[in-house]
Image 1 (cartoon, rainbow, N blue to C red):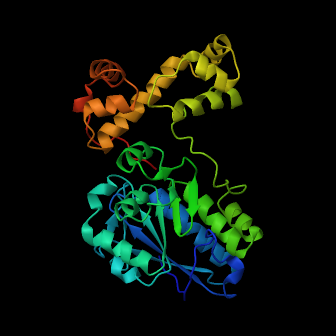
Image 2 (image 1 turned 60 degrees about the horizontal axis):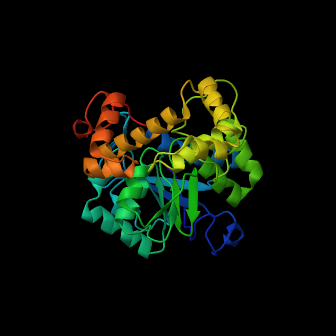
Image 3 (image 1 turned 90 degrees about the vertical axis):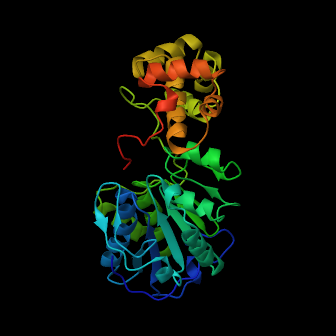
Length: 344
């Protein structure tokens, strides 16, 4: 991924820092992407392609980007495609902004030299960002202790259990001072469009979006919907409200009355709505969401089975095991492996 540039001194929307107007006109912004093995190609391309198109439409090198890897070698993505690196992380030491792009098993790559390199960049004043599960490595490096962060919804439960003192949101992306985190996938494009709008105006950002057959960009506060089940028919705000409550409360069983209150419905109306739109009862839907979180915790953390049961609201290990076997066809202790299907 080529690009020529000079320097850049601040994230594009820092908390209390300089704004876009403080940058010298015509200055090229240099951005680094650290690719971790099994990284999300979708997130990486969603972040870099808007920069390419912005340069083309502006007729000027507004952005330049570099690709590095932990050891300087080519990196294989989760889709099996390989991207050449321009060098190791040390080659990016003078870049003013770096995004860590990860996917499956980011913790497997949290080697001390890599974490030390990330800390050195942060000490030099670089803005540190992450796409998909890249936040995991920034957290391991101690660079997210005071930041509000987001990451892919599938990895968020394990992240919360591993780093309980870090505030995690379900938004598409988060800007917190010099820390920029993104859920990955197409949310990376929304984040980059926001960056382009902040630096070079809304008109250019809209023009870039149109090149990708998008009407515009989603706001950073839009919540991820990855875990929502497919609804029949048009979206329903009452159903959405009920499901959002369920997602927030995956560590306990909710009563029908609690769910109905969130949706501003009677219990009978709620039951009918769920049957009509989802084909299952509210209790069954919430149980399924809790079991899906349990499966993620089993596969992505080293928590004991009983700890996973407690974290997902089951009164005993036995009741958890019965429900788990009924849902997934095997005992929880036998399900500590990667999901069969990769994320985008």
